[in-house]
Image 1: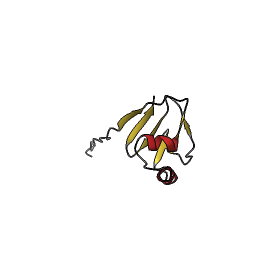
Image 2: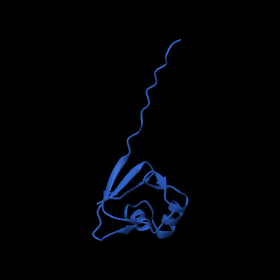
Image 3: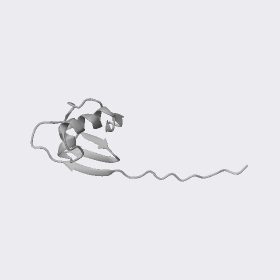
Image 4: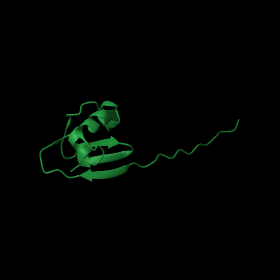
Amino acid sequence: MKKLKFTVRVAEKNKVQLKIDTDFIRLDSALKYADIAATGGHAKVIIGNGEVKIDGKPCAVRGKKLRRGDSFEYNNTVYEII
């Protein structure tokens, strides 16, 4: 019996750093700051649809506080708060 070999390529995720001057930024505000969402309402829809991931899991909490060192993922891009 022949053994089959498969090679799997995983696309690398883009990385973007978001610099903040405050102690934290709310997730919905971070989406606007990163030019992902045009308005707070748009950010609410994106978050509500489960399109934003934190720690690899969809996050539905639009007021989630992000601090320096935290990151979130949207559309195959990781945004790191610095």
